[in-house]
Length: 262
Image 1 (cartoon, rainbow, N blue to C red):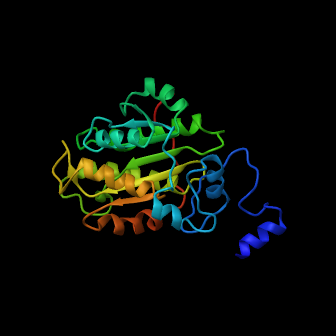
Image 2 (spheres, rainbow, N blue to C red):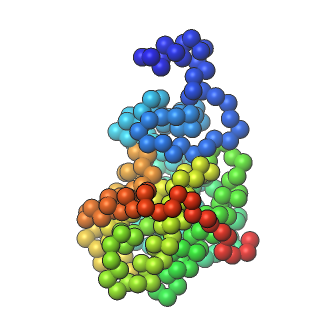
Image 3 (cartoon, rainbow, N blue to C red):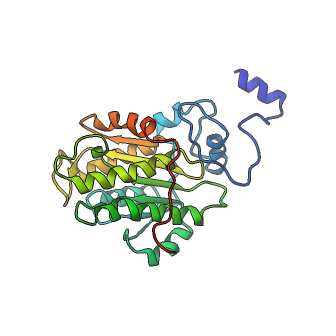
């Protein structure tokens, strides 16, 4: 009520209504600030919250997908394939991209709105696949999206192995933890809206799990459309514990660098 009365006296020019050439990413949580509310003026059927994000979290209006171009790596995988179908059902335009295809990457990313990194490897190339290539794609995407009104989004699939012992998957654990350090930096970077998806093990060519990739993808998207930036797809609870490490324990600033030539 107080916000409404103040808005009347200011002729609608309150803290949530300002002009901007480029918007910073909405990095807040429960409460709404200018970057979040401004998205409602760009996407009128989403981002309804003006004081808190509660409505959008309850009614799944906290992420715009319809009409947006999504570049998706791992589009044929156990997680990526069902996610592609779900995104297209929401009205997104999905462009698959092989994670190491840097020749096509720039063309694909040039007019993309969302980059989804759903590829992965447990083989000897794990550090390249799970960390180096992912960071390079994000940096390329940021370069193309530097002067847009709406900041780009990046969704990346992490793992609960960021928090629990490797149990023999040493290379995989090292690669996922290395990427998580970069991911922490992106999570706090106002140039992009970064979402970190942390699933419990799901059944895929990399191994067995208690849920399918289809279930994991549906679970993740259900949280994302409710505005979650840290996305715990967990039946063990480890992803919830991992949030403390991800959000608090990593350094506040983690430098990223291009790994490959343009």
